[in-house]
Image (cartoon, rainbow, N blue to C red):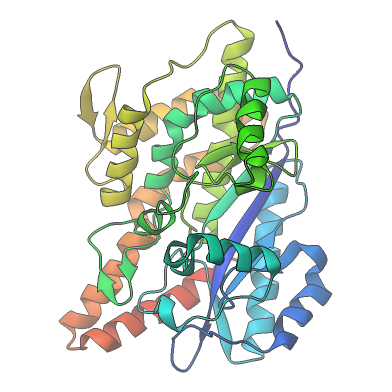
Length: 378
């Protein structure tokens, strides 16, 4: 059955870490006036997160990638300007290079208190940030159909967004350590496959009726039907420190969904692969980002990511042209040329050590780079 084309509207949520410009450490107890000032300027587009050292922003509903780009830049700029008046700075990054979760203070909110009471240290360790992209898909059945197919591309999006190589001062050896922390919670990871929206709702209702969750917002899959909006919400990505990289990832997200919808209108669909296979690519993206390639399941072999990226760009070319974001899609190549935030953080650290800095100074140098990179080009 043919379905009318969705709006493919866009909403972007980014979570930032707040640091002291002098110590470069996390601000574990910022004054209430800071959030009050942000709220005065941004209204309900800014909110506290689980840890007091975190700030979340969310764009308005944007008609296209160009609007989303302007909104993300505006939000970063306001948060940076307000923070600077206190001697602080926001970091668009998924983990702090040396901050410790045991030293953080939790935001006083009933939902957060209930979360940490239920999940204990698994929740108290959540000193991690992500970027979530909502794409407007009004039809709930289509939302589920696209979720089933879009799951294949989640590792590709993660590979291009990695920004969490450090954890509590240690080089973890992973480009996205964030997901090892987040995956300790229940109802995370790759989404389940459902035959219909009704089937999805029945499964959610079992958990609600059992008193385990309040609603579907407590299902934290890498990709999910939003519980608040008529959108499909991609949650797998680390926060991209460079704002241009972030917008290219937003463009890829919406273009992939339009590509899958366009194929559906021709009675075609992306093959559904077993979660065990997609999880292998998810792990490879966590460990290596794009460096060691991903598995092409149809070919049955690991393929260099540069080759896969060119295929992705070709897949969505028609959609990027229709959505007026071809420049942003072409700029995905810049992520591989420059390196993700994780690659660049490690380069800064190694360069500092080569110049004679000790470990403590080198990780502070990484924070300095993150401060500058977060607001560059906004």
